[in-house]
Length: 107
Image (tube, rainbow, N blue to C red; front, top):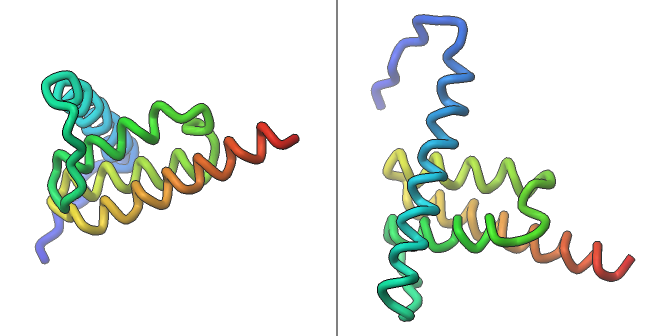
């Protein structure tokens, strides 16, 4: 697989910004899809990536680790065309967010 050469020192920052932009786009598309249809998509599609990203973002534990990093990785993978792997990461992030939220409520 061909990789783009790293020509500048700020390449890592560029990847983070790109991941945040992708997350924003996916969240926005998930919100519009949810408004248009109440049917839940559960297949290996970019739309499902958006749905999962929106569910993770809506969780109160979304800003905590490892939820935040798993979600960012999932969104980036989905944005790069690795939808199945991205969905796996987003599902892990959702499970971690739910467990963290349950622990916060239990304390």
